[in-house]
Image (cartoon, rainbow, N blue to C red):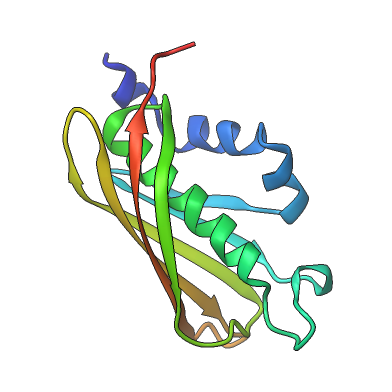
Length: 142
């Protein structure tokens, strides 16, 4: 069994749970594998900015982690974000943030990953509020 094959949703969830900041914001992985990952978090008052929208830093956090988990689904569990950019499209209003990331291209040295950041309303309607793209780099196992 390869290291990549052993890296499943439960293992990925354990990795997320080991991140104190992810626990602080209440993030959870809802999908992982085949070069893709979905991270969600419920909107709380303390995650909003002064106009009542979900803070851009929370959107950026979600993009960063979703991109890296998707890259890890393609490259293996020992990866780091090499860099990413976020384009905010509209204010983030809703009850849940969903960051859905997918590898666009993976090689031996990096994966290029795209992420849609969607707000989920109470009725389940998804609204795209930002998009991100980044690179994920493999690192030596500890």
